[in-house]
Structure formats: C-alpha cells, structure tokens
Length: 244
Image (cartoon, rainbow, N blue to C red; front, side, top):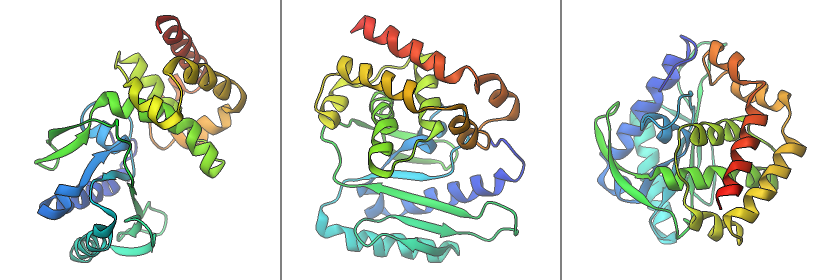
C-alpha cells in the first residue's frame, strides 16, 4: 500500500500493527472477515492509500459483546486510546500517539449482518504475515459500486474514493458479482448501473473528488486523474451496460 506523504508512514504502521494483533486472537480471526479499501490495497487490487480497517462480522448477535471485549483488550495492549465506539456493533475510533498536526485517528468499521451473496477466500497478507479471510475482488467491486449510492442515502455524503475505486477496478479489468448488487439493491446490475450513471452525473463534483482524494494518492497521480475521473468512470459504466 502506497504512502503518499512521509508522515503517512506512521498511520500505515498503526494499521499493520492493529490488523496483525486482531488476527493473532483466534476467536477474532474466526469472526472478522477483512474487506474495504485497505484490504484491496494490501492485496494489490488498489493503488491508493487507505486509512481505515473494515470487516464483515461472521458471529451471531450474542457474540458481539465478547468480540468487543476481545478487540478492546487488543487496543489496550497496543497502547491505543478509544476515542469513541458504537454501542450496537464493534465500531471504533482509536487514537495513537502523534504530533499536533499529524494524523492520529484510526477507524475500525464492522458490518453486521453480512450480505448472503458476499464471497470470501483465505489470503496471506504479506505485510503482516498472516493468512486471513478476505472478500474476493468480485465481491469488493460489487459492494464498492453500491457504496457510492448507499453512502449518500444513509449519510447524505459522497466519498470521492468510492468513485476512484470503481474507476480503478474497471481500468484493471476486474469483474464484479452481480448477485451482490441484486441482493443489496433489489434490482439487476444493468438497471442499477443505469441509475448509478445518473447519480454520478448529478452529484459528483470536482470539489468532492479533490477533498477526498488529495490525501490518498501520490501528488502526480492525483493531478493526472482528478479531472478525468468522473467522465472516464461514466464511460466505463456505459460500456458495461452495453455488455449486459
């Protein structure tokens, strides 16, 4: 995973420390399935910096409290301060030691219940030297297509990184799992992508792209892609409609 700026190395180190420590606990390793941008970057599917840890939770509802206790034990042992947490699912904002103007917060987000159509595989993550359960690229891609819209529906916010990831996955020739889209949106991929194009055309601005991506990409890469990203993604999506 790239580090766009020298100061990002500290955050990257804390990502790796936390991820490795969580999966050293056999119980946590059995219920936390890795996903999201950091997972994609560590697996070589994505060429940007990612600052959060995202998981699907494969325990049952009664196991959530025990999972929270185990995770919090890991955080204490690492010297991480819990700034905030959710009462319903294991979701945390953690603070690590850093300078006044440095990034100092690590977010851990856990999804429950998990879409039934998601697919997973056991993968060795070289940077932490662990074999862990991860979403397949097809599942990650499908969920990323949906995330761009659902983030807006839930929070009225749009993440430029969602658009960038969709563009990168298409550009790299990856496939997505249509069954995930059908489950999450209740419609086929073709109809959903048609709606997604309209959403992007209406809601994505250069300001949104700049605000979210300028800290996640190397400066040269950011300048190369920022003005092309929206239109090229729409072209990829229209081409996909033609194939469906």
